Length: 94
Image (cartoon, rainbow, N blue to C red; front, side):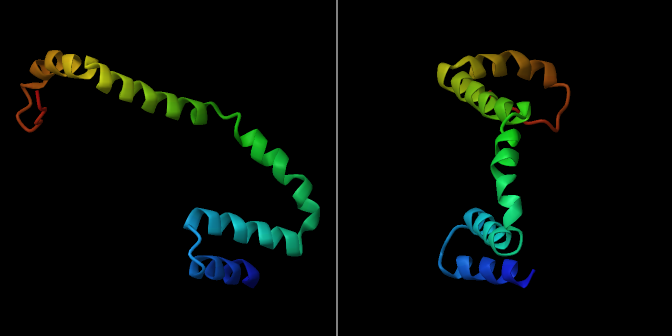
């Protein structure tokens, strides 16, 4: 278990970003102590890509960007803001 922490510190000192350092240190741990689990690693990685939430989030962000660029968001804001005007603590820019 010490190799996990030591490799993480080494990768961070080398200037590798945190996400990559975590992945590389976990991979080095599996290579050194549990090489039989390396056959399962690609299967688990690819099965995680089939989660619908991971597909929906980028598409939701894309939809928001398209609405912002096309001006639909501003039109919706002007129609929705008066219905929230009864709440004085909401400051919705028009």
